[in-house]
Amino acid sequence: MRLLPNGMKIGNATVIVDIIPKTNPEIRPGGHMNPTHVTDHDTGNAGRGANAEMHNRYIHNMASYHPKDTSHVSWHLSVDENFIYQHIPFDEPAYHCGDGFGVKSGNRTSIGVEKCMNVDGDRAATEENAIALDVYLLKNVINKKPSNVVPHQIWSGKYCPAVILRRDGSFNPYRKRIQAAFDGAKLSPKPVISTMHTVKRGDTLSAIAAKYNSTVSKLQKDNNIKNAHFIYPGQVLKVGASKPTTPNKPKPASKPVTSKANLRVDGYWGPATTRALQKALGTPQDGVISGQYNNATTRKIENVSFGTGGSLVIKALQRKIGANADGYIGPATVRAMQKRFGTPQDGVISKPSMMVRELQRRLNAGKL
Image 1 (cartoon, rainbow, N blue to C red):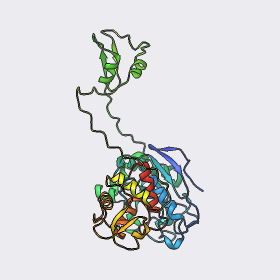
Image 2 (image 1 turned 180 degrees about the vertical axis):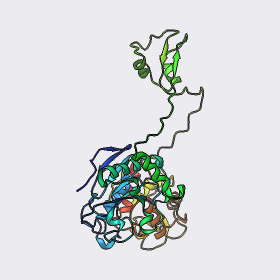
Image 3 (image 1 turned 60 degrees about the horizontal axis):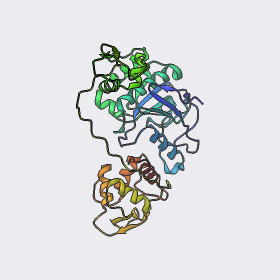
Image 4 (image 1 turned 120 degrees about the vertical axis):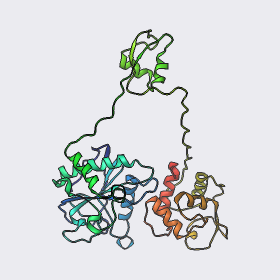
C-alpha cells in the first residue's frame, strides 16, 4: 500500500493515516491504480464541525455498511487547517469523480483530495495545507507537474470545488498558487516590528511585560535579567515583536461556554439525550419531546409526547441547523441533522442511529 508517513507534517497539518477496511466495495473498491492526476474537491458540507476528523469518521461509518445501503462515494484524503487524513491507499482507486469506472476515468487515474469548508474552520489555512499536500503528491507520489492537479469539474462536469470556482471564476488562479509552491516560491514574510523599551523611573518588569503583550519570564530571558526586581532607569530592554497595547482598550467579550453532557454514545435517543439537548439549547429540561405527530420518525425517540403544537427544543434545534422551525421531527429535519453531523442522509432515525451517536458526541463535547 502507498501511504503518507503517519504523523508527518505537510504544510501546517499533521498527517493521520486511518485506512478504511475492505468491507464495502462501493466505498473501497480495491484493485490497482497507477495515479496520474490529483483531483481537487470541496466537501460540500459547510456545517459546523464538518472538519477532516468528522469526514474520516463518516467514510469509516459508510464503509461499515452493507453495500446495498450505500452509494459509490469515497476519496483518498480529507484536509482541514490542522489535519490531513488518508482513508484509501494511493495505489487503489476510489469513487470521487462521478465519471464511472473506466480505465481512463478520474476514479481510476486520480487521487481524490477533499478540502473542508465548515463555517467554523479556517478556510485559508485549509487551502494552504491542501496546496502543500498537492505539491507533496506531485513530487513524491505521481511525479507530475501542477497541470496534473485538476478540478472535480473536469471529469464529470460537477461544479466542484465550489468554493474555488465561485470565488476565483475558474480553477486557474488556484493552480497558479500550486505552481508557485511547486517552484519553491515563498510568500514575503510579514514585517516584524522590532521594539525596544528604555526603562524609566517607576517602571517594573511586570508593567513593561503587560504593556507589550509579553511576560516577565520572556523579558528576563531575552535580556539576560537574573533578578526580575532589578532594572534601572536608562536600561534598554528588548521587548519582542509585539505592538504595544492601547491603554484601557476594552477586552472582547468572552465566548459563552456550552455545558458538556455525560451521555452514553449508543445511538439511542432517550430522555437523557433529550435533557442534554434541552440544556444545550436553553429550553425547559424535562427529557420529553412534546407535541409530535404519531409517525414512524418520532417513534424512534423515547419519551415523545404525541399531539400538536410542536416542541420548543426541536424548534431551537431546527433554527440552529437551518431547518424549518415548526417543532416537529420529520424526515426533512432528520436529513438536515444528518447533513450537519456528516452522516448518511436518509431522513430516518434508526435504532441505533449514526446521527444520534454524533449528536451525543457533540453534546458530550459541549460543541453542538
